Length: 319
Image 1 (cartoon, rainbow, N blue to C red):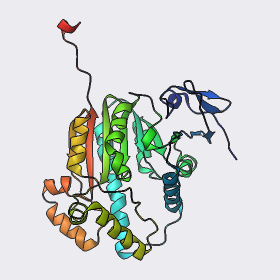
Image 2: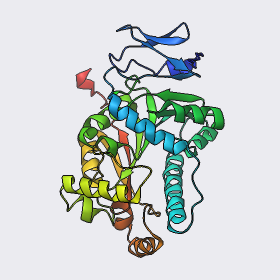
Image 3: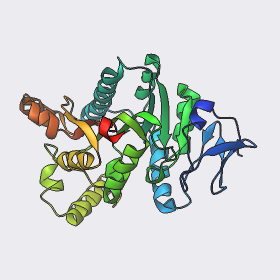
Image 4: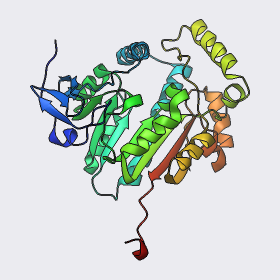
C-alpha cells in the first residue's frame, strides 16, 4: 500500500523530472512534472523518481542485491571477518577524507549516490550539511530513514539523475560506476552537470590496477575475465555474483575522463586499507604501500577528489 507524505521544501527546490528536466511540484501528496506532466509517487516521504526508460531487468537484479544487503549477516570468522573489517575501514577512510575536505566550508548540500545502507555518511550532518541519500532501491532508503534518521532520501537511477543543473555543492559516490562500465563518461558528465561551479566530487571505485587485480582486469580479455569471474562466484555459491555489465575501472582513465569533462584540482588520494584480500596478501600490500604511489594507484579501490571548474571571469574588454 502506498503511503504519501510531504517532502521537505529544501529537497523539492533541487529536484527535476528525470526525463524532461523540468521542475517538480507537489500534487495530492505525489509529485508532478511541470513540463511533461508525469506523476511520481512519494512513499514515506521518499520521492520515487525513475525515468520511464529505466532498464527494468537491471533494476530487478539490483533489487535482489539490495535484499541480500538487508539480510542479517552470518557470524564471520577468519578471512571473511578480516575482509569485512577491511571493507568497513575503507569506507571510514573515504568519509574521513570527505569530512576533512569540507570541515572548514560553509554548510553544503551533499549527495551520496548509490548509498545502499551505508550509514557512515550521515555523520556529515553533524557539520551542518544537508545530506541526501540516493539509491536505486527504495527499501534500503526506507531503512536509512526509519532506523537511522536519514531525512533527505530519493529513489532513482544514476542513468537519469532527477536533479536540477548546478544544484549540489558536493557529490559522493562509492563502488557504483563500475556497474555502468559502458556508460561511465555519460554518468560522470551528469555528475558534473548537477554540481554547482566549484562543487566537489568525491569518487571511489574498484581499481582495475589494484595490486591483485591487474593480472586479471588488465591482462585478460574482458570476455574471458567475466567468464572466469562468473565461474568463480558460482563455484563458491556467492550470495552476490557480479553482473556481466560490471567491470573494474582504471584510475588513470577515470582521472583523464574527469579532466576532459572540465573538472579541476583532480587528486588521487592514497589509501591504507586493502579490502577483498586475505591477511597474507594484506601484509604484502602494507610493505609495498610504504610507497605513496602504491597507495594511490594500486589499492583495491582508487579514490579521486575533484572540483567542477568555475566560470572564467570576464575581462573588461568583454563587458
